[in-house]
Image (cartoon, one colour):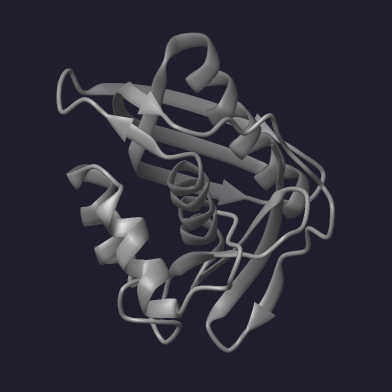
Length: 172
């Protein structure tokens, strides 16, 4: 999101929830974004001059990937039809966790572009550089903003008091 004047955190949270479909609103409320940074998992957007950037945090790596995906969908204004529900499986491999995250988010973008699908429930298993995913979602009713690519710019999964955190920059 781009702002001419930085909004308050409360306004940002209200505006984000106000513009999302009920399915994503439920997930975001569950993730703790409405309660602030003290929650065990979540994401928020960061001011970035040319692209979009989010920071995601979670207690473990699969939850971090889930929060990154939810954050990416929130940034792009993705809305889902309530039905039909669709399940997809996904297997990915990479040399490190950061590359695996970029591949995972890039694959979600590809599925959205090619098949018009997005996901709101994530069953993820990560073992070393391998990710196995069972994704549950639906066709998109709309996507108000286009994300062209997930970048490697500044990406680093770091331990933190919240568990793990990462900043992800998206090319728009």
